[in-house]
Image 1 (cartoon, rainbow, N blue to C red):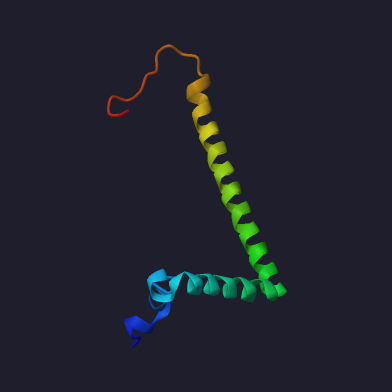
Image 2 (spheres, rainbow, N blue to C red):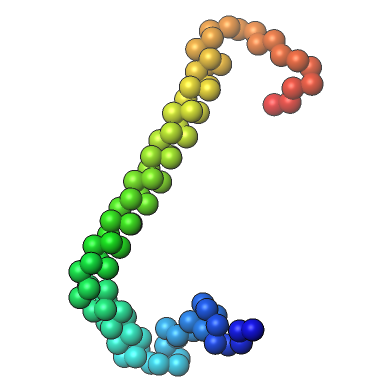
Length: 92
């Protein structure tokens, strides 16, 4: 069994706390993380490709959702009728 103080993300909680490391310590941790990420070109390229693909998928799904909403509401908007007859049990 894993100790909650030394397991997974719970171990990382508070590591960027300025009370624990001071301002210079936090900047040092961030600088070290940046160097470790940028100096490994393959890892950095994979990260950029992954983030770009994720953003592309989010934008694509948003546009599909907007298109479905436009198509679904087109009949109601373009019908041109002054009276709309519906079942009495339909709520607004």
